[in-house]
Length: 360
Image (cartoon, rainbow, N blue to C red; front, side):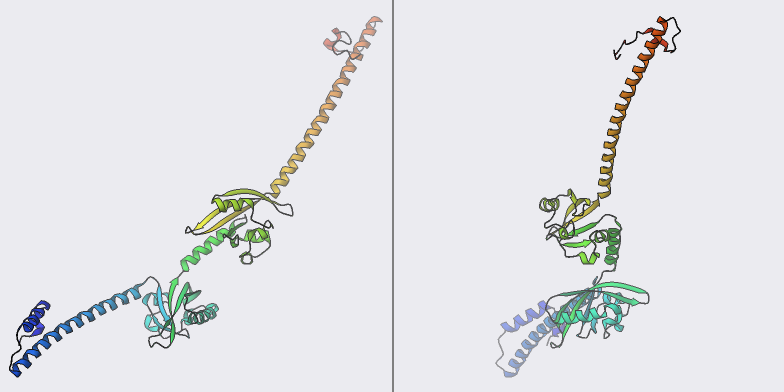
């Protein structure tokens, strides 16, 4: 009998075809041997198919294991008490602990004490819904070290099919948080009030200068319709509404009920082409307007004083001309009486009195 294990797949197929074509011997022993060889060929073919399927499954398992462990985010499974049932290598690196020392321990062991209560709430909420839940937590993976993560979790059935658990993705958002803080510091450093509102005109972000302007802490401002806080109106300012509709920046000047003046620049924004927002930058002009008004008053006063000086100059010039004519007359009368003229008028002595304007 041929050793079936040495045959190729094609060889097995040909051998089975040969056996099918051959007639079963009439002799019971030979017939039994024929049927046995057919069965052996069929079993060998089935065994090879099973081995190939098993090999494919092992390759798939290895591939998914590698994908699981080398994923750019941490993956872990938590039970209802927050114990780590399973974690990938990326997640263990985020915790700065070897995987063998992580599994079976509570995730709260690496969470900042301030956030441990939020973790417990997150696990309860995840197990109570089929939706994806999220929470941001601060980790303390080692002495003096702090990392910030976002935990995105969904309820799943445990391996035994009875106990629910959380399948979670642990995303490192430390760099994003640092960038957000730097952006917020820059945002707050601006001396001009700045705020951002959504399509419903509700404030989603504001800097400290705007909080000072409206008399509220920045976090207390969020959710308010901006025009109710500033400039305390019943509707969006015309420029803002026009800018949101036409998606172009607008500049307008506003006056508050207490008599303050502001220039408002608004710039529409799109979030990935979908949700629209608008950025408003306010510049107070009250001091400038007061200075302009003071300058206008001073200019009016100067014009009035110049007019008064002009009238005074004209009056003084007229008086001086009268005095010159009087002196001319006195000099003329003195000459008629044979006396020396008492006043020296230079070249005016050669002019006849009253010549010119005829004032006397």
